[in-house]
Image (cartoon, rainbow, N blue to C red; front, side):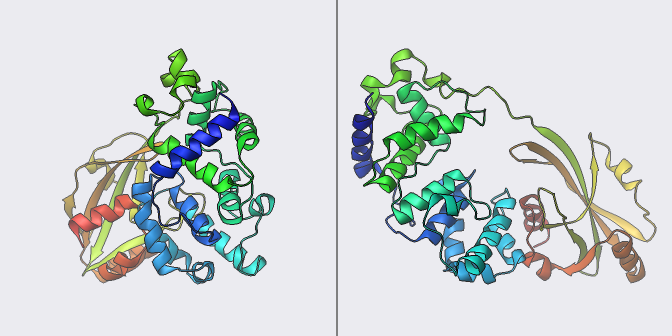
Length: 351
């Protein structure tokens, strides 16, 4: 298919089929950046409420920069990939402190900001500043590989340059934002991973994958994600309406979030074996939850929650000191940023 024909048909399709989203049709780099960070690894219907909450809480990049990390993590709670939230906060501070509160207006300078990669930089540059930088993500890989028959393996880092070169060669200088949005929307809603809408596809006649019967084979991806299984046993030490919790440390999937004392095992063990690791003198064993399965991209977590009523204050304080935990009331815990696994347990059992 000729590039010019593809571009014209794609933009024409988009004029009637585009998704109406609150960050569309504006040239505000803050809102475009915020939407792109939230939508990384996240579907639009899941990310949209978070975008609206962030805009309501932090209308400007200055407002976001002035927030505490705990406030940002609390608002992000449930979206996962919490490093995105920490990078979001760090990036806002960079924009305010190093760029006088204004996002840089070109691709290379945008790449210097914390948490902004090539895709996000291209999105901001094209949508906010009308620069001809093509975005490349999973949707773009899928559309271009199918339509043009690009068989490079997308699990290899070098392949991104192949697709970037193809997209940048086609992007119209006078409509870069429209082209990028059209390409993303077409991949997200029409040329989907499974059951793409080939019957009504404007490129059907010349689509390489359709004509070669290779729709399910493109894009090529050979490496499979290895999933790690982890077994969590949470101990909830309680005393007169207060519980002991801790903030998870650096280089942790839940860095900056709060959870209970954790005993992690490489394989499932009996609750009796877990309790054998604890000095139960002065402690009454309470409710023990059923195992809960929590799925992350590269991990499967199987968790159980064990409530332990501590009778004496001295014992409660000793546990706090020995296990490096802090005491919180339920009201205070409600406002802490927490992993969704822990938050769900609390909502169902204690809040």
